[in-house]
Image 1 (spheres, one colour):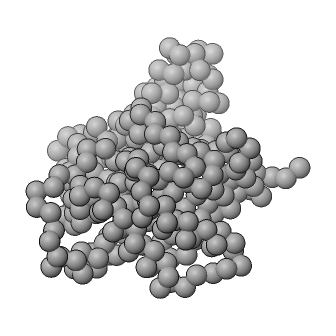
Image 2: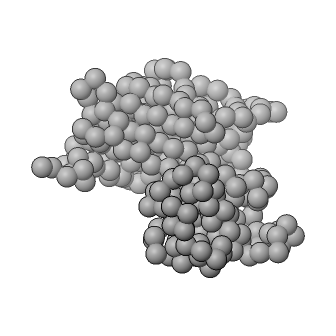
Length: 275
């Protein structure tokens, strides 16, 4: 039997990634670290953020704004396997782009869209851009870095032509806005994020994150996360009657023995005490 690993292929050139999932769906939860333009050739792409799911089908395109967590589901549909291209725009690339166009007539006072998942209308500029990259799904045909860079530039101009609001998202080079630390950690406690990543996604340097955290908690960030995970685990075990073998993964532990040991140290009894 063919393994799931043999049914999936992801490869990239520069900051453009080609993705196949042949006859199985693939679900992942991740932080979108760079602005990303996604085009679906076949299959279906589901993006969930804040309880809202956006469905992107074959021939459709979606923009994912950076510094947001989404749940992605890539799956086959109507007998066709998932096939898509993910074009990322790093900060350094966008700064270079901005300097090249800043002498042109830039829109003044445009506001960034509130949504971080924006499904785009079907327009010829975007469709022709991604169809021109179809040959590169054949891994024996390798494009040059210069070609891929031109495709990224074309992608930026295509977005700007779709909606002037993209100026505010793409060319915002200020530090990420500060968001409430506790709100972020309450929503993301179950994920495997380093302190550096949490600092970044709340709009802070690691030093300012630690400094701000001291103002709101007597615990260190690590101990706060541990306590949060154990409290949620206790509720799931005692009130929701869930199995310990399921709960430890749901709350962010990777190892059952580590979870059991931490649980007993915190509550004074093992997680199986009332089961």
